[in-house]
Amino acid sequence: MHPDDVPRFARLGATATVQPLWAAHEPQMDELTIPFLGPRRAARQYPFGALLRSGARLAAGSDWPVSSPDPLQGIHVAVNRVEPGGNGPVFLPDERLRLTDALTAYTAGSAYVNHLDDAGRVAVGALADLVVLDRDPFAGPPESIAGTTVALTYVGGECVYAAE
Image (cartoon, rainbow, N blue to C red; front, side, top):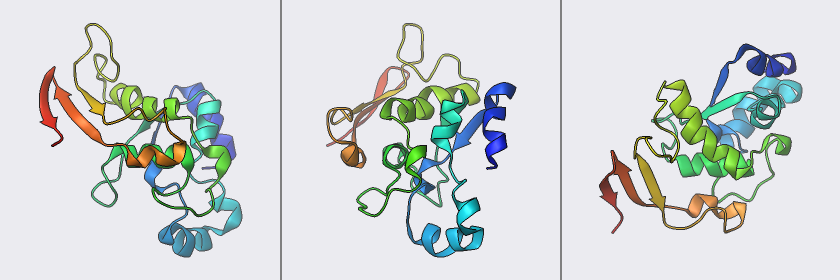
């Protein structure tokens, strides 16, 4: 994305739909994308932090079936800019998101772009579609976010999944 376009999102009221799982050093990025784009253009990839700082709304998701549909994996990369389980260099560290911002992009941001005004948040009158995680992702180090798993899933207030 050209740097001049970043502030345009907020000015236009546009939402940036992002797929954070790709924003890390991994073979495709390092062996194909960066060499093809060159360093100047490669440094413009996945500007999540810049978009958020400019006042843009983010909606996050995945490119499944070509990448993991697991939002916790994408949240991990959005926060760390390193693949889950990876220990390589951080990809464009200034573009990392805070955990709160990554969770908001995957919940309220995605509900917003899908015109689901009664979803994406926990509130009286909102849809009771939610997950219960096996642990508090805020309690541990950011590097452990990808190890968080879903314990329960509720749709319409009814439990539709319970981990064994």
